[in-house]
Image 1 (cartoon, rainbow, N blue to C red):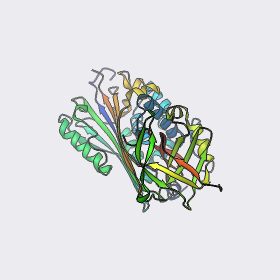
Image 2 (cartoon, rainbow, N blue to C red):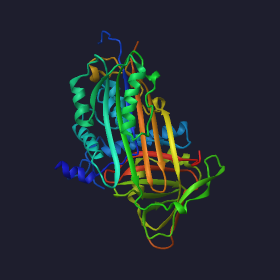
Image 3 (cartoon, rainbow, N blue to C red):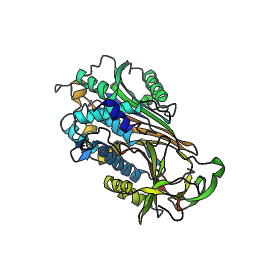
Image 4 (cartoon, helix red, strand yellow):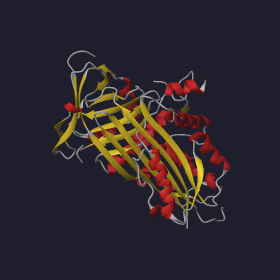
Length: 423
């Protein structure tokens, strides 16, 4: 099938996200050493095990979000797509049990030609200029002087992730961090700053892999700022705050919507109709129970049941900036060996000398009357071993879950929860 057709049916993946960074530190040498689918065919999406590729990303999205929500259920915002991409690039260099554990968490097979094509197609689509919204992504490798990466690994990153290698001097932490941070800031339109701190770089730092992604979209039906007023919002703690709330009522527009006994689900499309925000509004104030319940099967069922309805919408404006340490959450999901000295990332350098010491994620989102702008960043640090009737009312006056969703590929790229829009 022609690439032009492939790119047409996936048109512009959403991303309010970010820069994903993978920092790798070298070990002392030892003796051991997408509607339509993103890759369409006549029979639907190409599966990996029992999952299509978008389902792999979506399953990871719900899993990592639930883990983080258990640690901090305040205004949470991440780019699971960004985290997934950073880990996928790292996973390309894993072997043995290290690779097996990462495969279980990411739900993809290593060195899978179809998966590689999926990642390449996403990268290409994200970098197509679009008159309706701004979206872009970039990957890069920042390599310690005299560190030799395997050519096969470099070719995978270049061909399927669009990344290339640049040599940096990690003996100067301030200078090397500034170089990488400037790249990240440029790629995220200035939304992600100071991703790499000097204390993340030490004499054993060998490689930093970065992914940056940025999105800015305008609502297909914009909110009139004159209709924005302060309205009560019941927080997760049970207190009431006055939240600046956007209003869209008594319009001729119809929105895709569904509900059940426990929640309401609304789609707010951005201009171009390729990307949407999906808002899950529990009917109770208990968003925690909802987060702990929702999974890929429920999500697929609910989205399939959505129909166009007239809806009166009340949505708080919010701006959220977050930072997370992901090591514990990823270990809870089953990725433990990669964080130990028994890790095997020898497909990167040819030697069993690297392990992940931590994973750090930063994200930012601004939702207002015009639309949405967001970015996110992840740092994976590796170190050495030494229909009809009256209008439905959709009133987000209590905690809710939301995500940015690429409709044609069926892929979740960002997720968040609002427990107090004034926080």
